[in-house]
Image (cartoon, rainbow, N blue to C red):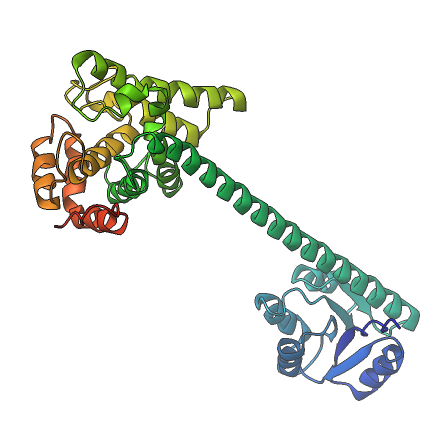
Length: 370
């Protein structure tokens, strides 16, 4: 058996017993009623029991109906309760004042019972409709938020899968992509207030850089195994082929952009990082030989992150250097390999880099601090 819906509550605010008795008798068959004989009591009841509608007298001692309504509308807990004035004040300016401070209706005494019931019924229906729409909007917002989170999780998983594809072909890199994306984010945060970088390194862009960083070596999927997995140092011809991984990475992301119908912030950062992270501040890097500010900020951040991680990691051609030695070697590249300001930010947060390196260190290696 379906339960009958709960009856709505009307708060009657009036200091005259006869008026209270009349309104209570009029409403009791259809609604629950509460009574307040002063403005202060009306505010107290409205805050504690949240009536669905208030019938408000205007002329009351101490706190009149206008001031009572003003206080109700100023309080977020009671601001949405509809107020209907019932008053003998019949001048147009009185009605304008009442509606101006937030009342939904204005009924002049002596009242007509059918009119009062019709107005109460109408405004309760409007309140219910507004509440329904609000609930629906909140539900839709929740669904959109949930769906957005799902899409972001899918995006993150896809990015890591693509990055891991490149990583699995190079068995020396281990947790390299996780370390470098955290290095890049830490470095970006450290530079957010710097006048040279503040316009680019918004909170949103820092988050995008974190997501983009794992794709910096995606181009390695195009490097032949005989070169990528060679256990010895590469000769000059092999090295030229290896350097093309930056071009392969750029072209891969360009294809994704073309498929999606154009660039966006995330793909722009990913493409910049993949293409230019091997450029050097003095112009001696590759693939384009860019120098100074011509190198995108995203790539300058990745250059510091990538080189630091290479130094503290074991390679076929070198041992893993301790953190302190790696930092000293990085310092030597200030103004030649690295943007001086970016390198200075790295030096200021080097212990944060060390913590990231230890957190995501490869299982077969010892911590960077050792």
